[in-house]
Amino acid sequence: MKEIKMNYNEFEIIRTSENLVEIPAQRKMKVPGRIYTDESMMQRLLSEGGPINQVINVAQLPGIQKYSLAMPDIHWGYGFPIGGVAATDWQDGVISPGGVGYDINCGVRLAATGLHTKDIDNRIPSLIKELFRAVPTGVGSSNAIRKLKQKELKSLVEKGVSWIIEQGFGAPDDLNYIEENGCMHSADADVVSSRAFERGLAQMGTLGSGNHFLEIDRVDKIYEQQAAEAMGLFEDQIVLQIHTGSRGFGYQICDDYLKVMGKAVQKYQLDLPDRQLAAAPIQSPEGQNYLSAMACAANYAWSNRQVIMHLAHKVLRRVLKISESDLQFRLVYDVSHNIAKKEEHDIDGSKKTVCVHRKGATRAFNSGNDELPDRYISAGQPVLIPGDMGRYSFVCAGTDTAMDETFGSSCHGAGRLMSRQKAKKAGRGRDLFKELNNRGIVVQSKGRATIAEEMPDAYKNVSHVVDIMHNSGVIKKAARLKPLGVIKG
Image 1: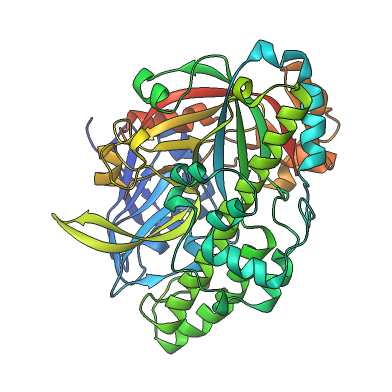
Image 2: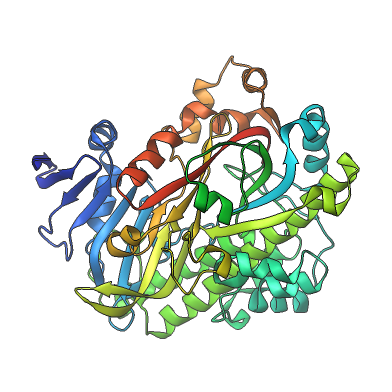
């Protein structure tokens, strides 16, 4: 299509294709900004302003490479927009906690079964009730398993999921289907505050609040047979999704290091457009300590999802009264949404080591990538993109285009349309539980306020978001999931 030029706040913006706009490097921008969005979504973004400003601000980070990127689920976040991706030079660039977020390694895990809808059709209410009992939800939720000792938590955050499997939660083979095999080896518990440890001792195996969920889904549609078969997915199959992160442990680490980074900005005389982008050089003591603490939180989050999956597995066996061979419970994959990682990418024709910040974005590595387990080498990495609790979620696969254009990254969900406050206001007088039940979805949560905050109307249509990424070639759709039962915090 012919390029279309527009202006935002005196910045030139160019629509280069139906699904992509570019903000050329202007003023203090070191690289262009790119937003994957179609015309209807772009008009809303222009009216909001804030997320576009954040894309422009991120483009000014010291050492940023190629582009400041945003996915179609973009909305305002702390520092970076949610849906933002940026890679900084590993030697000369910076690390910014705002490019990771407070809920470090918030992510999604997909587990498959061998069951069909008919096998659980009349058992969904009892399954949701028992899952709600087994997996604590809500602000400050705790005691899914026994409270860990300080020494145990230190082992967990440094060794990751392998340690929690040694305690009886899951099987060793699960490690093959978790990003980074469930452990960032740069983790160092000595750079984590005692307050973070206090908060993390009792929260292992808990969902927390907000948009976190545990969901029973059915595979509603298969788009790409090869990719779906590689992932072991088939039509009408029952699967589980788990969406949560590092709980109070990760939140405290982010909070602690934002204070450290605020001082580092002055110490290293960094020229930043927004104090929420507080950063430090990657190779500085502050930068290295943050990366080691962030890795501890990432390992906590993977372990948290591992424990929840194990608890859910036990509930399915107990409620359905079926054997392991009949259930055929299996981890498909676990992806991270809020993380910064050392990776190698093609920059201007040569391989370069960078720190990829993904803030509300999913890694989407291509087929043939040696980071993937053998099962997915031919299909590409599973990319899990949950929607709101009333519509759909998608399972996709990463592509060569993702490696070329987005540092192997894609969107992470639907993206909010309304703030939580606006959603609660819009939900007044409505029986949202009944509305969802009329759609065939059983929902349970700690309170009605959470359901109002997370009602489907508060989110973009995930089908629209995923189509933009699919049509851009960044991902390819493999399967669509439809919710049957949802637990919210």
